[in-house]
Structure formats: C-alpha cells, structure tokens
Length: 118
Image 1 (spheres, helix red, strand yellow):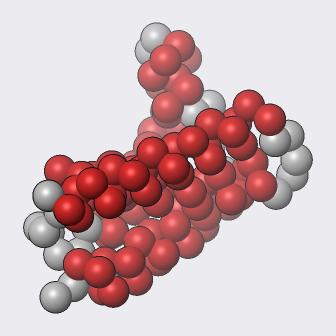
Image 2 (tube, helix red, strand yellow; image 1 turned 30 degrees about the vertical axis):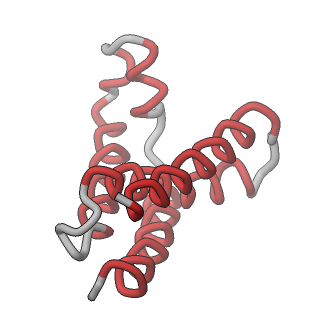
C-alpha cells in the first residue's frame, strides 16, 4: 500500500508538471523534448500504482507503449478520432520523440532496478 501511495504522489506531481509545461511553456526544448521524457515517466508511475510489485521490469512495456502511440501517428488516425483522443495520440510523427521516449524509459528502467528490482 505504501508503494502505491508513493507512486500515486509521484504520478500526480509529474502530471502537474506536464500540465504546467503544456499550458505555459512554449519553447524549443522543454515542451517538445523534456515533456516527452516526462510523459513516459508519468505513464510509468501511473502503471506502478496498479502494479507495485509485478512485473519487476515495467519500463520496457511503458516505453513500448509510447513507441506504439508515436507510430500510430504515421497512420493519421488522430484525424479520425474524437478531439480528446487526438490530443493523446498526437498529430505528427517525429523520430526525435522516440529518442525522448527512450530516455524516459531508461530513467524508468533505473527506477525499476533501484526500487522495484528486489
């Protein structure tokens, strides 16, 4: 229970940072790159709320999910779904986004090893 609360708190904090970045930061680094890295970390801690023990290595699954969402952008699906889903899916594919997701996945991998790998 304690791990779930900690993960929930971290998820809420990272989500708050992501919202602040989306609403108030309009630059060429923090929003496009750091925001993508934090998006993976945010999804990771959300998943950790429900999976505090298993699988021990969750980060590759979360990173794969982020890659899948980015690859869906190649299909122009965001034009065919409701606006809320198109925000989640995004509009344009960018290879740099995959690198940012990978960086976020690596951060989550080390979190897994340090705190959940026992």
